[in-house]
Length: 90
Image (tube, rainbow, N blue to C red; front, side):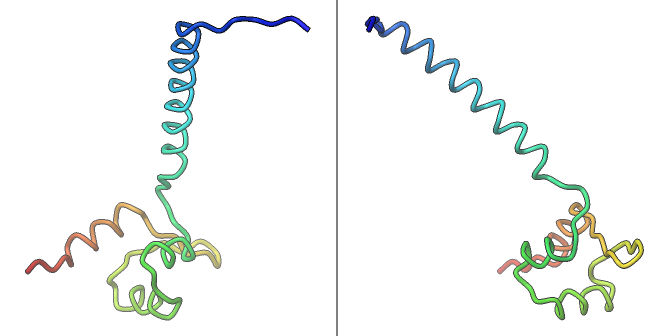
């Protein structure tokens, strides 16, 4: 069995390469996690609300939505805007 010697330069090179690959993976993950349109389940998780509360927000016009067939979609940007508009500061 052959042995090889690893130098500190080898480790530094490996560290740079590994960090570069991790950075690329994190950037790619960020692209996929920021959806433009969200389903009802995503919105309920994000806002920590029940299905009934989400329906009330739709019915009273607080949250704009689009309905395609039986699916309801919400724009992530619009939800953020509604949260910002209704922000209460003391």
